[in-house]
Length: 126
Image (cartoon, rainbow, N blue to C red; front, side, top):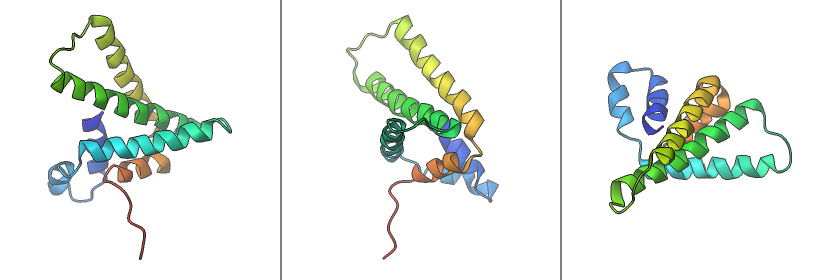
């Protein structure tokens, strides 16, 4: 998910020769925080009314990013954890569903705004 979203954001950059450099600007923590903010907002909205198709697909993407990022962190740093086939297949399914959801919404304004949010918190004009 991390690399998919970075590649999608970089493809919007008008200067192909700088896309690789742009890709290195992204940070796991900022991306997870932005995803969590959107997840909270969409989950709250979902309590009051049904989500649009775009919002529902975006929720799949952001929740998958959060979940998979946490699992990647655990895999990297918790050497005592034992992974079993079922758990790994479930995570692969989460990623597959998120990739499919992204494919549906990738050009929607809401999805493009999400990509921008992955850079970090917006500053308010002074």
